[in-house]
Length: 104
Image (cartoon, rainbow, N blue to C red; front, top):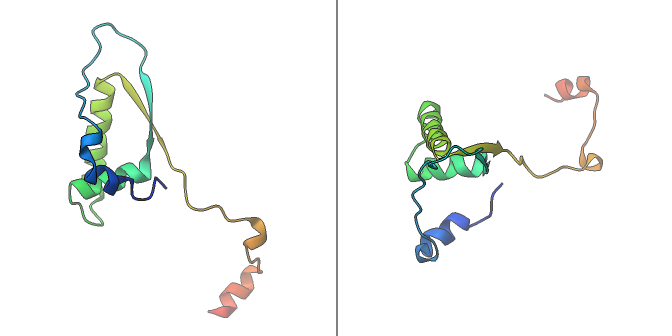
């Protein structure tokens, strides 16, 4: 789900960070794990590259570019999807399947 307002905060306070150009290490070492919130990351690259809904090929190509770059820098991206808000079983309304069809 990401952190609400984080992208806006970073855009407003760009002086808090710096761009770091990663280069491959001179001696082969095991890759470093890079944990990426896939939903937030996809949203961020879609906004920066002004993609619109339905442009799945373009989003896939951008994701591949980033993954290839990270791998070239000896990073091993691992994507996580944290999903939506958890629903407690007590909050679910259980009905027989037939009643759902009859309601329509």
